[in-house]
Image (cartoon, rainbow, N blue to C red; front, side, top):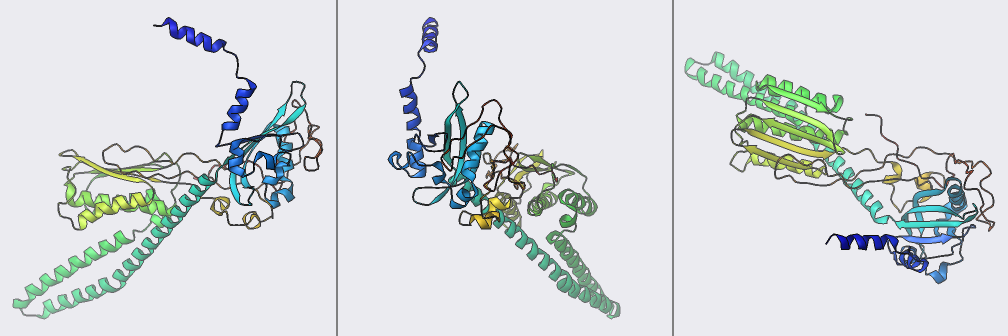
Length: 464
């Protein structure tokens, strides 16, 4: 039983390599990638089914044409096609993302790799070009950005309304009730003993109501979070409310790679605030522990108490609404939320929300915006943006999480200048029909892109 597989394996190793016909069949059959070859002047000399599907040209229509036909007019005017061939010769290969044009004139966002092909004697034979249509990925990036933008506006609108309500309650309702309390106290001093006791009870009720309203205004607009950041805001809330007002011991740990965006910080603060209120009202806990830390492109937060393990009220009134609000806040932000408990062991509220970097102007620009409007120069400077799979955050430690994904995004592209391709490696002009020649050994370095753009890595955000 073991000898036959070994013989088959040995036979496969000794089999003849793939024939040229089989390799051609493989390339021609690929539909997701446009794979074709250019001669040293940049003219198209081969064409596969994937290229026809992506660009719309049949082999009969496109063979013999210069590959610059795929570039927008502004890129042709800036000399980008020629520069890409020169860079491929100098560096061996070039990768770029930018707008390309189909046969019908429509544009699509493409990832392009151009590789210089040399023979055994070091003579340039042409270029291999692989094109992939990235329009769906780019559309998904824009949809994600639009969701983030709407989420930011929603949080800002909510906080503005909360602030307005807090000021209205403070300047109107509380002041009016303070005046009522003063009048009741004055009447209690002047009224006969028969009525004085009742008036003082009314005065005490009014003062309790004033205290609850002041607590409400504090919860509506907690001081400090918009000025001092998330960690300081949570620390102040725990000290002023949990410790001082409720008399409950607590611990607080934070390990953040960078300060979250204001809207993300507000979302985390509000969920923690509601979770702590549940602990105070229902858990019968002796202490509470709060942890926030950066994880998987976002921030994971845990609020753990040592209470009865049943923090949710059985009625479906305000307390149930608080749980729904926590979940909806996390999911609206693109994250997940879960709560799990064990009788007599306490309850854990855990959630994760993304903490993405700000989007660059290039990423926020839609395909309908002209290159002049997008780049400010009349020629495209697409750069090379690389995004990974949508981060879903760390897996929750308890059951019943609700997951929502959020993609990563590119950072802003650095300013670039037109290059000078130096050295003896490149001569000729593919735009005019003369061959591009060079040496595969002594290749020049490219110091930067022309107006047409260069594949540049995403800069990292070091401002944390």
